Image (cartoon, helix red, strand yellow):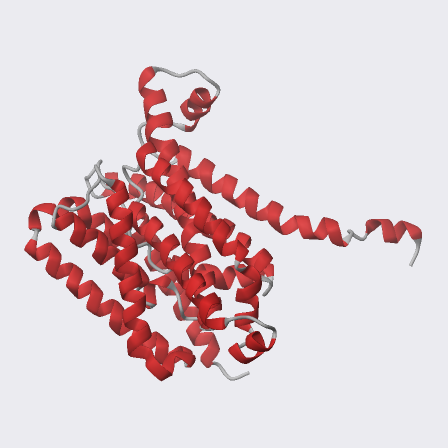
Length: 349
């Protein structure tokens, strides 16, 4: 190989920076799309405000409404992506997303029940997080008990998870029936929405996400061993029970933090880990940050897409105030992707 040709071959170090750069670019694109997707203020006015100009109305919309909403969407997506990756690694189950392990439905039930009973609400966001955490741990614990010896079987665990999730969702519906006056304020947790998220939500979410995200990354090495199997992990000196418990605590806390702010965004925690492993490989030192960035792109993009879709369908349906929740978009797209993956797995090789 000639010297000139060798110079054309990218170095390993350069290649390693390509993927993070692409993911960061994706996050930036999702953020820009979210900032300019709304109805009231156009892209030119957004740029003007970000440059320090703009009238009072435009500055209020951009700085107090769109910016915190966009940031919350990105960080919530990062939380769910990391939570799903940790869950699937700790349980060695590719179907162990927060949505099908009782964690997300439990967190929703905790938040809704606490709000319906008057113990929490938007004026006490810390109480919502605490209630969501309690519900998430209860949901995961219920699945753990029901799965019993079938915990090592991914498909059986997924079936038990769906059953637990269905029961918890039914209990949530019962709470809504008991406390119908709170329906307007809690329905967003059921679908998953970023509308109306302001700096209060951002200030609540980012420290929580940073702390538990860092804790999850510190567990990268034990999680990598757990993915190899309990026997191999124990042979390497890992206390598997403690490591798995710590990992589950991180996953539940990250899920609860995201759910308490944006609700149950369907399929994000289930599918993002698969994307992260496909892009970043099995080494969790890279897969976990990759899942955070991928989750941010997915939820940020879904939020922007939902806003654009609302602008498109609103006039056609005669409703200028139509607002499609981001959770509806992630659920529809995620279900379609899961169906495609399931059908491909059934095809003979």
